[in-house]
Length: 481
Ligand code: ADP
Ligand code: GLC
Image (tube, rainbow, N blue to C red; front, side):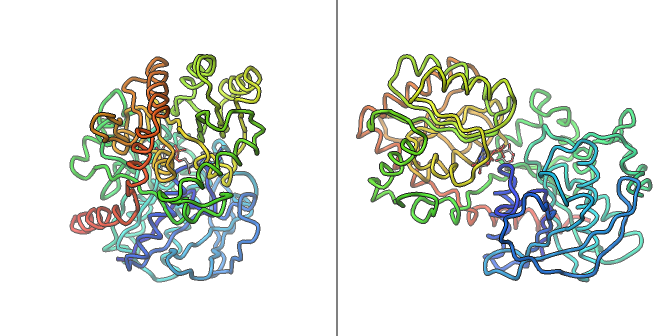
Protein backbone atom coordinates (compact mmCIF):
# COMPACT_ATOMS: atom_id res chain seq x y z
CA UNK A 1 0.00 0.00 0.00
CA UNK A 2 1.01 3.60 -0.50
CA UNK A 3 0.91 5.18 2.95
CA UNK A 4 1.53 8.80 3.92
CA UNK A 5 1.96 9.72 7.60
CA UNK A 6 1.57 13.37 8.55
CA UNK A 7 2.74 14.27 12.05
CA UNK A 8 4.08 17.07 14.23
CA UNK A 9 6.82 14.84 15.71
CA UNK A 10 8.78 11.93 14.27
CA UNK A 11 11.69 10.18 16.02
CA UNK A 12 14.60 10.49 15.68
CA UNK A 13 14.21 13.93 14.05
CA UNK A 14 11.97 15.84 16.47
CA UNK A 15 10.51 14.45 19.66
CA UNK A 16 8.57 15.77 22.64
CA UNK A 17 6.95 12.47 23.67
CA UNK A 18 5.57 9.15 22.53
CA UNK A 19 3.96 10.46 19.33
CA UNK A 20 7.41 10.76 17.78
CA UNK A 21 8.40 7.22 18.76
CA UNK A 22 5.16 5.85 17.36
CA UNK A 23 5.26 7.57 13.97
CA UNK A 24 8.97 6.70 13.58
CA UNK A 25 8.52 3.07 14.64
CA UNK A 26 5.25 2.33 12.83
CA UNK A 27 6.35 3.90 9.54
CA UNK A 28 9.66 2.04 9.58
CA UNK A 29 7.96 -1.29 10.26
CA UNK A 30 5.43 -0.66 7.50
CA UNK A 31 8.39 -0.09 5.15
CA UNK A 32 9.98 -3.31 6.31
CA UNK A 33 6.68 -5.06 5.52
CA UNK A 34 7.02 -3.88 1.91
CA UNK A 35 4.71 -0.86 1.80
CA UNK A 36 5.58 2.41 0.05
CA UNK A 37 5.65 4.69 3.09
CA UNK A 38 6.35 8.40 3.24
CA UNK A 39 6.25 10.78 6.16
CA UNK A 40 5.73 14.54 6.23
CA UNK A 41 6.81 16.61 9.23
CA UNK A 42 8.04 20.16 9.86
CA UNK A 43 11.69 21.07 9.60
CA UNK A 44 11.96 22.73 13.03
CA UNK A 45 15.28 24.48 12.52
CA UNK A 46 15.97 24.96 16.23
CA UNK A 47 15.29 21.30 17.06
CA UNK A 48 16.75 19.53 14.03
CA UNK A 49 19.68 17.18 14.86
CA UNK A 50 22.87 19.07 13.90
CA UNK A 51 24.25 16.63 11.35
CA UNK A 52 21.10 15.89 9.41
CA UNK A 53 22.06 16.06 5.73
CA UNK A 54 18.86 17.22 4.03
CA UNK A 55 18.56 17.73 0.32
CA UNK A 56 16.08 19.92 -1.48
CA UNK A 57 13.06 18.08 -2.89
CA UNK A 58 11.08 20.16 -5.31
CA UNK A 59 10.08 23.73 -5.98
CA UNK A 60 9.14 26.30 -3.36
CA UNK A 61 5.45 27.09 -2.94
CA UNK A 62 3.65 30.17 -1.81
CA UNK A 63 0.60 30.01 0.42
CA UNK A 64 -1.47 32.14 2.77
CA UNK A 65 -1.30 31.36 6.47
CA UNK A 66 -1.88 33.73 9.39
CA UNK A 67 -3.24 36.37 7.01
CA UNK A 68 0.01 36.73 5.07
CA UNK A 69 1.82 35.10 2.18
CA UNK A 70 4.68 32.78 3.05
CA UNK A 71 6.97 30.43 1.17
CA UNK A 72 7.66 26.84 2.02
CA UNK A 73 9.62 24.06 0.40
CA UNK A 74 10.35 20.39 0.92
CA UNK A 75 13.58 18.82 2.00
CA UNK A 76 14.27 15.14 2.36
CA UNK A 77 16.78 12.64 3.58
CA UNK A 78 18.36 10.31 1.08
CA UNK A 79 16.51 7.01 1.06
CA UNK A 80 17.47 4.79 3.98
CA UNK A 81 16.88 1.06 4.12
CA UNK A 82 13.94 0.20 6.41
CA UNK A 83 13.10 3.83 7.02
CA UNK A 84 10.23 5.60 5.40
CA UNK A 85 11.08 8.47 3.05
CA UNK A 86 10.78 11.53 5.28
CA UNK A 87 9.87 14.93 3.83
CA UNK A 88 10.54 17.99 5.95
CA UNK A 89 8.48 21.11 5.38
CA UNK A 90 10.86 24.05 5.58
CA UNK A 91 9.42 27.52 6.16
CA UNK A 92 11.43 30.33 7.71
CA UNK A 93 8.38 32.19 9.10
CA UNK A 94 6.78 29.22 10.80
CA UNK A 95 9.45 26.60 11.44
CA UNK A 96 12.59 28.74 11.37
CA UNK A 97 12.66 29.18 15.15
CA UNK A 98 10.97 27.90 18.30
CA UNK A 99 10.36 24.40 19.61
CA UNK A 100 7.81 21.81 18.54
CA UNK A 101 4.88 23.20 20.54
CA UNK A 102 3.83 26.12 22.64
CA UNK A 103 3.26 29.06 20.34
CA UNK A 104 -0.42 29.95 21.03
CA UNK A 105 -2.47 30.73 17.94
CA UNK A 106 0.68 30.41 15.88
CA UNK A 107 0.57 26.72 16.67
CA UNK A 108 -2.70 26.42 14.72
CA UNK A 109 -1.16 28.29 11.80
CA UNK A 110 1.97 26.14 11.85
CA UNK A 111 0.04 22.90 11.73
CA UNK A 112 -2.38 24.17 9.10
CA UNK A 113 0.69 24.89 7.02
CA UNK A 114 2.00 21.36 7.65
CA UNK A 115 -1.37 19.87 6.67
CA UNK A 116 -1.60 21.88 3.46
CA UNK A 117 2.00 21.11 2.60
CA UNK A 118 1.24 17.38 2.93
CA UNK A 119 -1.59 17.65 0.42
CA UNK A 120 0.53 19.76 -1.93
CA UNK A 121 3.41 17.28 -1.72
CA UNK A 122 1.24 14.50 -3.15
CA UNK A 123 0.37 16.77 -6.08
CA UNK A 124 4.02 17.67 -6.65
CA UNK A 125 4.98 14.00 -6.66
CA UNK A 126 1.82 13.02 -8.54
CA UNK A 127 1.66 10.30 -5.92
CA UNK A 128 -1.78 9.26 -4.68
CA UNK A 129 -1.54 7.50 -1.34
CA UNK A 130 -4.02 4.72 -0.59
CA UNK A 131 -3.99 5.90 3.01
CA UNK A 132 -3.16 9.25 4.55
CA UNK A 133 -2.55 8.57 8.22
CA UNK A 134 -2.91 11.69 10.41
CA UNK A 135 -1.93 11.94 14.05
CA UNK A 136 -3.56 14.08 16.76
CA UNK A 137 -5.21 17.49 16.37
CA UNK A 138 -2.19 18.96 14.57
CA UNK A 139 -2.97 17.15 11.35
CA UNK A 140 -6.68 16.42 11.92
CA UNK A 141 -7.67 18.96 9.24
CA UNK A 142 -6.02 16.90 6.48
CA UNK A 143 -9.19 14.85 5.74
CA UNK A 144 -11.10 18.10 5.19
CA UNK A 145 -8.38 19.56 3.00
CA UNK A 146 -8.40 16.41 0.91
CA UNK A 147 -12.19 16.53 0.58
CA UNK A 148 -11.86 20.11 -0.72
CA UNK A 149 -9.15 19.01 -3.11
CA UNK A 150 -11.43 16.34 -4.57
CA UNK A 151 -13.74 19.08 -5.87
CA UNK A 152 -11.02 20.28 -8.23
CA UNK A 153 -8.72 17.31 -8.84
CA UNK A 154 -8.95 13.54 -9.10
CA UNK A 155 -5.66 12.67 -7.41
CA UNK A 156 -7.27 11.72 -4.08
CA UNK A 157 -10.29 9.99 -5.62
CA UNK A 158 -9.40 6.63 -4.05
CA UNK A 159 -7.43 7.86 -1.03
CA UNK A 160 -8.77 7.26 2.48
CA UNK A 161 -7.85 9.13 5.67
CA UNK A 162 -7.12 7.54 9.03
CA UNK A 163 -6.80 9.68 12.17
CA UNK A 164 -5.07 8.32 15.25
CA UNK A 165 -5.83 10.04 18.55
CA UNK A 166 -2.75 9.84 20.75
CA UNK A 167 -3.97 12.26 23.39
CA UNK A 168 -7.59 13.39 23.45
CA UNK A 169 -6.96 16.09 26.03
CA UNK A 170 -5.13 18.19 23.44
CA UNK A 171 -7.85 19.11 20.94
CA UNK A 172 -6.55 22.24 19.21
CA UNK A 173 -9.25 24.80 19.98
CA UNK A 174 -8.65 28.16 18.28
CA UNK A 175 -10.58 31.20 17.05
CA UNK A 176 -12.33 30.13 13.85
CA UNK A 177 -10.70 33.02 12.00
CA UNK A 178 -7.43 31.02 11.81
CA UNK A 179 -9.12 29.25 8.90
CA UNK A 180 -10.08 32.48 7.15
CA UNK A 181 -6.57 33.80 7.73
CA UNK A 182 -5.29 30.70 5.94
CA UNK A 183 -7.63 31.23 3.01
CA UNK A 184 -9.68 28.22 4.15
CA UNK A 185 -12.95 30.07 4.76
CA UNK A 186 -14.57 27.61 2.38
CA UNK A 187 -14.26 24.91 5.02
CA UNK A 188 -16.72 26.59 7.39
CA UNK A 189 -19.72 24.77 6.02
CA UNK A 190 -18.14 21.34 6.42
CA UNK A 191 -17.04 22.30 9.90
CA UNK A 192 -20.33 23.47 11.27
CA UNK A 193 -20.48 21.16 14.29
CA UNK A 194 -16.84 21.73 15.20
CA UNK A 195 -17.19 25.51 15.49
CA UNK A 196 -18.71 26.57 18.81
CA UNK A 197 -18.76 30.21 19.95
CA UNK A 198 -16.53 31.11 17.02
CA UNK A 199 -13.93 28.59 18.05
CA UNK A 200 -12.84 25.68 15.90
CA UNK A 201 -11.97 22.34 17.49
CA UNK A 202 -9.44 20.73 15.14
CA UNK A 203 -9.61 17.27 16.68
CA UNK A 204 -13.39 17.15 16.59
CA UNK A 205 -13.34 18.21 12.94
CA UNK A 206 -10.95 15.37 12.15
CA UNK A 207 -12.98 12.81 14.10
CA UNK A 208 -16.02 13.71 12.04
CA UNK A 209 -14.23 13.77 8.70
CA UNK A 210 -11.77 10.85 8.81
CA UNK A 211 -12.68 7.57 7.12
CA UNK A 212 -11.40 5.58 10.10
CA UNK A 213 -10.25 6.49 13.59
CA UNK A 214 -8.06 4.83 16.16
CA UNK A 215 -6.57 5.47 19.52
CA UNK A 216 -3.48 3.79 20.87
CA UNK A 217 -4.83 0.95 23.04
CA UNK A 218 -8.04 -1.10 23.17
CA UNK A 219 -8.77 -0.16 26.80
CA UNK A 220 -8.36 3.55 26.12
CA UNK A 221 -10.68 3.24 23.11
CA UNK A 222 -13.41 2.10 25.50
CA UNK A 223 -12.52 4.73 28.11
CA UNK A 224 -12.83 7.73 25.80
CA UNK A 225 -16.29 6.68 24.67
CA UNK A 226 -17.51 7.54 28.19
CA UNK A 227 -18.39 11.02 29.49
CA UNK A 228 -15.89 10.51 32.32
CA UNK A 229 -12.86 10.15 30.04
CA UNK A 230 -13.97 11.45 26.63
CA UNK A 231 -12.96 15.07 27.34
CA UNK A 232 -16.20 16.24 25.74
CA UNK A 233 -15.76 14.15 22.58
CA UNK A 234 -17.26 10.82 23.73
CA UNK A 235 -20.54 11.33 21.86
CA UNK A 236 -18.72 12.40 18.69
CA UNK A 237 -16.65 9.23 18.87
CA UNK A 238 -19.63 7.00 19.62
CA UNK A 239 -21.39 8.47 16.59
CA UNK A 240 -18.61 7.03 14.40
CA UNK A 241 -19.59 3.49 15.48
CA UNK A 242 -17.25 0.77 14.24
CA UNK A 243 -15.15 3.27 12.33
CA UNK A 244 -13.39 3.85 15.68
CA UNK A 245 -11.24 1.32 17.60
CA UNK A 246 -8.05 0.84 19.57
CA UNK A 247 -4.74 -0.56 18.31
CA UNK A 248 -2.01 -0.96 20.90
CA UNK A 249 1.23 0.92 20.23
CA UNK A 250 4.43 -0.97 19.62
CA UNK A 251 7.92 -0.47 20.99
CA UNK A 252 10.68 0.35 18.53
CA UNK A 253 13.32 -2.16 19.58
CA UNK A 254 15.78 -0.72 17.03
CA UNK A 255 16.19 2.11 19.55
CA UNK A 256 15.03 0.47 22.79
CA UNK A 257 16.86 -2.81 23.32
CA UNK A 258 19.52 -3.30 26.03
CA UNK A 259 21.35 -5.76 23.77
CA UNK A 260 22.20 -3.01 21.26
CA UNK A 261 21.62 0.31 23.08
CA UNK A 262 24.60 2.61 22.39
CA UNK A 263 23.66 4.91 25.32
CA UNK A 264 24.59 2.24 27.92
CA UNK A 265 28.01 1.61 29.49
CA UNK A 266 27.36 -2.10 29.14
CA UNK A 267 24.84 -3.82 26.90
CA UNK A 268 22.99 -6.85 28.22
CA UNK A 269 20.42 -9.56 27.53
CA UNK A 270 18.24 -11.73 29.81
CA UNK A 271 21.23 -14.12 29.97
CA UNK A 272 23.78 -11.43 30.87
CA UNK A 273 21.99 -9.41 33.54
CA UNK A 274 25.30 -8.54 35.22
CA UNK A 275 25.43 -5.84 32.52
CA UNK A 276 22.30 -4.29 34.03
CA UNK A 277 23.99 -4.09 37.44
CA UNK A 278 26.85 -2.20 35.77
CA UNK A 279 24.38 0.20 34.20
CA UNK A 280 22.91 0.80 37.66
CA UNK A 281 26.34 1.48 39.18
CA UNK A 282 27.18 3.88 36.36
CA UNK A 283 23.86 5.72 36.75
CA UNK A 284 24.29 6.06 40.53
CA UNK A 285 27.77 7.46 39.92
CA UNK A 286 26.66 9.79 37.09
CA UNK A 287 23.94 11.35 39.26
CA UNK A 288 26.10 11.55 42.44
CA UNK A 289 23.83 9.25 44.41
CA UNK A 290 25.20 7.58 47.51
CA UNK A 291 22.99 4.55 47.86
CA UNK A 292 24.07 1.04 48.71
CA UNK A 293 24.58 -0.97 45.48
CA UNK A 294 22.03 -3.50 46.75
CA UNK A 295 19.39 -0.83 47.51
CA UNK A 296 16.53 -0.71 45.04
CA UNK A 297 16.58 2.23 42.63
CA UNK A 298 13.28 3.72 41.43
CA UNK A 299 13.28 5.50 38.06
CA UNK A 300 10.87 7.77 36.23
CA UNK A 301 11.13 9.49 32.84
CA UNK A 302 8.11 11.61 32.06
CA UNK A 303 6.49 14.84 31.10
CA UNK A 304 5.68 16.26 34.55
CA UNK A 305 1.99 17.03 34.12
CA UNK A 306 -1.20 15.94 35.88
CA UNK A 307 -1.85 13.17 33.30
CA UNK A 308 1.28 11.35 34.43
CA UNK A 309 0.30 11.18 38.12
CA UNK A 310 3.14 13.58 38.98
CA UNK A 311 1.14 14.72 42.03
CA UNK A 312 0.94 11.12 43.29
CA UNK A 313 4.71 10.77 42.99
CA UNK A 314 5.55 13.94 44.90
CA UNK A 315 3.02 13.07 47.62
CA UNK A 316 3.79 9.36 48.01
CA UNK A 317 7.56 9.38 47.68
CA UNK A 318 8.55 11.31 50.86
CA UNK A 319 6.92 8.58 52.99
CA UNK A 320 8.45 5.75 50.98
CA UNK A 321 11.90 7.35 51.11
CA UNK A 322 11.59 7.91 54.87
CA UNK A 323 10.72 4.28 55.54
CA UNK A 324 12.61 2.30 52.91
CA UNK A 325 16.28 2.37 51.91
CA UNK A 326 15.55 3.21 48.28
CA UNK A 327 17.00 5.66 45.77
CA UNK A 328 14.97 7.70 43.27
CA UNK A 329 15.89 9.15 39.87
CA UNK A 330 13.46 11.38 37.99
CA UNK A 331 14.11 12.83 34.53
CA UNK A 332 11.46 15.20 33.25
CA UNK A 333 10.21 18.67 32.72
CA UNK A 334 6.79 20.20 33.01
CA UNK A 335 4.59 22.15 35.38
CA UNK A 336 6.16 24.21 38.17
CA UNK A 337 4.38 22.68 41.19
CA UNK A 338 5.85 19.28 40.28
CA UNK A 339 9.33 20.47 39.37
CA UNK A 340 9.46 22.53 42.61
CA UNK A 341 8.28 19.56 44.69
CA UNK A 342 10.83 17.25 43.09
CA UNK A 343 13.62 19.73 43.71
CA UNK A 344 12.53 19.90 47.35
CA UNK A 345 12.52 16.11 47.52
CA UNK A 346 16.09 15.93 46.27
CA UNK A 347 17.11 18.62 48.84
CA UNK A 348 15.42 16.65 51.63
CA UNK A 349 17.03 13.34 50.66
CA UNK A 350 20.55 14.28 49.54
CA UNK A 351 22.43 11.43 47.92
CA UNK A 352 19.22 9.43 47.57
CA UNK A 353 17.09 11.45 45.16
CA UNK A 354 18.26 12.85 41.83
CA UNK A 355 15.93 15.11 39.87
CA UNK A 356 17.12 16.11 36.40
CA UNK A 357 14.89 18.80 34.96
CA UNK A 358 15.69 18.42 31.29
CA UNK A 359 14.86 16.61 28.10
CA UNK A 360 17.71 14.16 27.54
CA UNK A 361 17.22 11.17 25.24
CA UNK A 362 20.44 9.34 26.18
CA UNK A 363 19.89 9.82 29.92
CA UNK A 364 16.34 8.47 29.48
CA UNK A 365 17.88 5.23 28.14
CA UNK A 366 20.37 5.03 31.00
CA UNK A 367 17.59 5.49 33.58
CA UNK A 368 15.40 2.84 31.97
CA UNK A 369 18.39 0.46 32.07
CA UNK A 370 19.88 1.41 35.45
CA UNK A 371 16.73 1.45 37.60
CA UNK A 372 15.16 -1.57 39.29
CA UNK A 373 11.59 -0.25 39.39
CA UNK A 374 10.05 2.16 36.91
CA UNK A 375 7.18 4.46 37.93
CA UNK A 376 4.28 5.17 35.55
CA UNK A 377 1.42 6.08 37.92
CA UNK A 378 -0.68 7.89 35.29
CA UNK A 379 -4.15 9.25 35.97
CA UNK A 380 -4.91 8.40 32.35
CA UNK A 381 -2.63 6.92 29.71
CA UNK A 382 -3.75 6.36 26.11
CA UNK A 383 -0.95 3.82 25.70
CA UNK A 384 2.34 4.74 27.37
CA UNK A 385 5.62 3.53 25.97
CA UNK A 386 8.05 3.77 28.87
CA UNK A 387 6.53 0.79 30.70
CA UNK A 388 7.14 -1.33 27.59
CA UNK A 389 10.71 -0.07 27.30
CA UNK A 390 11.29 -0.71 31.03
CA UNK A 391 10.15 -4.33 30.72
CA UNK A 392 12.54 -4.99 27.83
CA UNK A 393 15.37 -3.66 30.05
CA UNK A 394 14.45 -5.89 33.02
CA UNK A 395 13.14 -2.91 34.98
CA UNK A 396 9.88 -3.73 36.72
CA UNK A 397 7.07 -1.24 35.97
CA UNK A 398 4.82 0.14 38.71
CA UNK A 399 1.74 1.39 36.90
CA UNK A 400 -1.83 2.43 37.41
CA UNK A 401 -4.46 0.25 35.80
CA UNK A 402 -5.59 2.57 33.03
CA UNK A 403 -5.53 2.72 29.23
CA UNK A 404 -2.51 1.10 27.60
CA UNK A 405 -0.88 0.50 30.97
CA UNK A 406 -3.72 -1.91 31.76
CA UNK A 407 -3.23 -3.59 28.36
CA UNK A 408 0.53 -4.16 28.79
CA UNK A 409 1.21 -4.73 32.49
CA UNK A 410 -0.30 -7.53 34.58
CA UNK A 411 0.19 -7.61 38.35
CA UNK A 412 2.76 -10.24 39.34
CA UNK A 413 1.48 -13.19 41.36
CA UNK A 414 4.31 -14.78 43.38
CA UNK A 415 2.31 -18.02 43.81
CA UNK A 416 1.84 -18.72 40.12
CA UNK A 417 4.87 -16.75 38.89
CA UNK A 418 2.75 -14.92 36.31
CA UNK A 419 2.67 -11.17 35.67
CA UNK A 420 5.22 -8.56 34.67
CA UNK A 421 4.80 -5.60 37.02
CA UNK A 422 3.02 -4.01 39.96
CA UNK A 423 -0.41 -2.58 39.17
CA UNK A 424 -2.64 -0.41 41.38
CA UNK A 425 -6.28 0.23 40.56
CA UNK A 426 -7.13 3.76 41.74
CA UNK A 427 -5.22 6.98 41.18
CA UNK A 428 -4.49 7.74 44.82
CA UNK A 429 -1.43 8.03 47.01
CA UNK A 430 -2.16 4.87 48.98
CA UNK A 431 -2.47 2.91 45.75
CA UNK A 432 0.93 4.04 44.54
CA UNK A 433 2.53 3.40 47.94
CA UNK A 434 1.04 -0.07 48.04
CA UNK A 435 2.26 -0.89 44.52
CA UNK A 436 5.81 0.33 45.25
CA UNK A 437 5.97 -1.49 48.59
CA UNK A 438 4.63 -4.68 47.03
CA UNK A 439 7.30 -4.55 44.32
CA UNK A 440 9.95 -3.90 46.99
CA UNK A 441 8.83 -7.10 48.75
CA UNK A 442 9.44 -9.03 45.52
CA UNK A 443 12.82 -7.32 45.15
CA UNK A 444 13.93 -8.67 48.54
CA UNK A 445 13.31 -12.23 47.31
CA UNK A 446 15.82 -12.78 44.46
CA UNK A 447 13.91 -15.74 43.04
CA UNK A 448 10.68 -13.77 42.77
CA UNK A 449 12.50 -10.75 41.40
CA UNK A 450 14.24 -12.71 38.67
CA UNK A 451 10.90 -14.17 37.71
CA UNK A 452 9.03 -10.89 37.37
CA UNK A 453 12.01 -9.40 35.50
CA UNK A 454 12.19 -12.36 33.14
CA UNK A 455 8.44 -12.22 32.48
CA UNK A 456 8.78 -8.57 31.41
CA UNK A 457 11.87 -9.12 29.27
CA UNK A 458 10.13 -11.92 27.41
CA UNK A 459 7.18 -9.72 26.37
CA UNK A 460 7.18 -8.80 22.71
CA UNK A 461 5.58 -5.43 21.99
CA UNK A 462 7.35 -5.02 18.65
CA UNK A 463 5.74 -3.09 15.81
CA UNK A 464 5.81 -6.24 13.72
CA UNK A 465 2.87 -7.43 15.87
CA UNK A 466 0.90 -4.28 15.19
CA UNK A 467 1.46 -3.66 11.49
CA UNK A 468 -1.04 -6.35 10.40
CA UNK A 469 -3.69 -4.70 12.59
CA UNK A 470 -3.14 -1.39 10.80
CA UNK A 471 -3.20 -3.17 7.44
CA UNK A 472 -6.60 -4.65 8.28
CA UNK A 473 -7.86 -1.24 9.37
CA UNK A 474 -6.55 0.40 6.19
CA UNK A 475 -8.24 -2.28 4.08
CA UNK A 476 -11.54 -1.65 5.84
CA UNK A 477 -11.14 2.10 5.25
CA UNK A 478 -10.42 1.50 1.56
CA UNK A 479 -13.59 -0.58 1.29
CA UNK A 480 -15.71 2.37 2.50
CA UNK A 481 -17.28 4.68 -0.05
P1 ADP B 1 3.73 10.71 26.34
O1 ADP B 1 3.76 10.64 24.87
O2 ADP B 1 2.37 10.94 26.91
O3 ADP B 1 4.72 11.68 26.90
P2 ADP B 1 4.80 7.98 26.25
O4 ADP B 1 5.08 7.03 27.35
O5 ADP B 1 4.01 7.49 25.12
O6 ADP B 1 4.13 9.27 26.92
O7 ADP B 1 6.16 8.49 25.60
C1 ADP B 1 7.08 9.27 26.27
C2 ADP B 1 8.36 9.28 25.46
O8 ADP B 1 9.06 10.49 25.75
C3 ADP B 1 9.30 8.16 25.85
O9 ADP B 1 10.12 7.82 24.73
C4 ADP B 1 10.14 8.80 26.96
O10 ADP B 1 11.38 8.16 27.12
C5 ADP B 1 10.29 10.19 26.41
N1 ADP B 1 10.51 11.24 27.42
C6 ADP B 1 9.61 11.83 28.24
N2 ADP B 1 10.21 12.78 28.99
C7 ADP B 1 11.50 12.78 28.64
C8 ADP B 1 12.65 13.53 29.06
N3 ADP B 1 12.56 14.48 29.99
N4 ADP B 1 13.85 13.27 28.48
C9 ADP B 1 13.94 12.30 27.52
N5 ADP B 1 12.91 11.56 27.10
C10 ADP B 1 11.71 11.80 27.64
C1 GLC C 1 0.38 10.28 23.80
C2 GLC C 1 -0.07 9.53 25.03
C3 GLC C 1 0.73 8.27 25.30
C4 GLC C 1 0.99 7.50 24.03
C5 GLC C 1 1.65 8.41 23.02
C6 GLC C 1 1.97 7.70 21.71
O1 GLC C 1 1.29 11.27 24.05
O2 GLC C 1 -0.07 10.35 26.18
O3 GLC C 1 0.01 7.45 26.21
O4 GLC C 1 1.83 6.38 24.30
O5 GLC C 1 0.81 9.47 22.72
O6 GLC C 1 0.82 7.16 21.12
